[in-house]
Image (cartoon, rainbow over all chains, first blue to last red):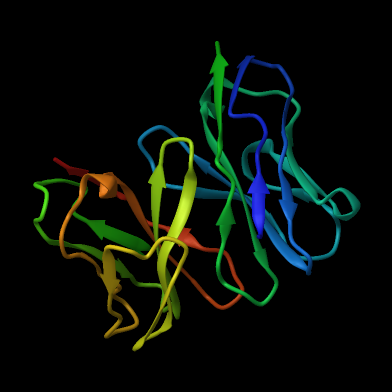
Length: 113
Length: 111
């Protein structure tokens, strides 16, 4: 079955630390990849997405992600986190041409000031 | 643009009661979706629609119904509420093959 795995359920970092959140998927075809963020008490917002082209994509608020096809991965990175990055982060995948997103279980990030 | 709006924000139901969660979008998107979010489980697709008059089941459709009479609206119906339906419900919309935009959510508690 198609699935998305986020292996880090909870991450705690100090401000200015670097961040990398893992995302792996199991799909056989061409995929579209997304990272969404959910700040406390808010709805999901798009951080960045990959459809095609340069596998290193840059999103809002200094986030970036790299699509590595051979590893079925789409890890999220940020070189220096801020307290305001405290949120839950979701990786999501859909097969190109299909509409149904499959979400990972999410990673809760807590950044201490 | 208001984007995707949902009402109510919060609701408490008794077991066996029914209710409709409202969702509307003003972006003229053909595709609309309903998800439920449970702690540690991510988001699961309940139903989706590819256009007015067309709906289809997602991953967890049991206990829910939907309709899509207009492009703008996509209500989710719970006929006989059960404690297992306690969750946060998100509606989303998109153009074909594009990013999904989410509403603010409805928090439902079934007691």
